[in-house]
Length: 374
Image (cartoon, rainbow, N blue to C red; front, side):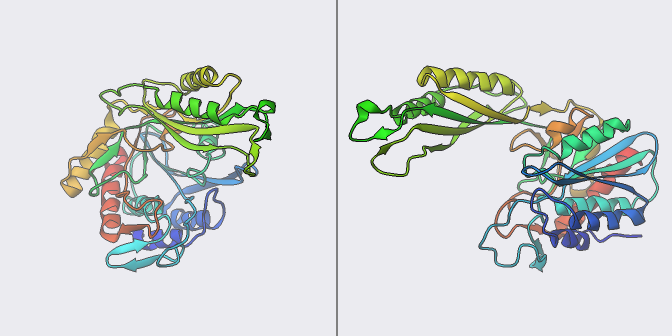
């Protein structure tokens, strides 16, 4: 049987799967996979505030080689101001509009459609699909990896369908990603009346000193594979609400996107030292979302590169730029690369994917499947 990737993408977009996602959107995917001979396993993990999260593992075939496709069905909140309902898929002027059209329901639909065109193959094909990639990922892909490990399931290579293309479909393949760490620095003070500053301890000047010291840090110059690491202050605030009150503390929020010259724990320690020097008594809370990783050259590079070149004539550039993906977890399982649709409208109002790109991506994924298990 055949699967129309645009129609399947539309059915997925119509599901309100704001992260963390469960339920209907997984029903739609399962209904598409079962007739194609896939065995589908679904599991719900976790509790609020990071859950519950639904995950899906689907497999067809047996033995090796084992090729995995990974992705997510959750989407970010649409926000206000769309021209159309973000959860009513709309085709207009050659584009498919809707939240998740780019990131990344369409690429999942493309892979399912490609599998439909490859009813027979050697080895095993798996889909590793989470409902929590856009959120904290506490109960998402890490739980899927645990589930797979408990059953002795280990793909030989994984393609993640994240939207990596930039100027045109096929121009960028991500072979690694930078790490990410969020930190919150609390600078202490003593609350008091502004008319009696000797009875208070204003944290704001100390907070400013922390910001200045952080902004002066030079992390590294990057290397052949990665751009320089960067530290960005994302918020500065205090709990004060009245104009005549000196606040009791101040908070600096920051994010560091870092390359493989750095480790998350070392960066946290560096920020702790910097904050203590600038404002003694400061405390740091940190959340490391993932370490930087780089997939070493191997078969997955050539399979994906050749499929893109054969279908589009484009020679893709191998890159590590941009944000994180669930590759930060999956790299512990096997070699992994990211490749998918152009990403210009992901997370934006009126998110849209070109219908022709969706159909071309299906053909590329079919060639990838042939190269991996055909």
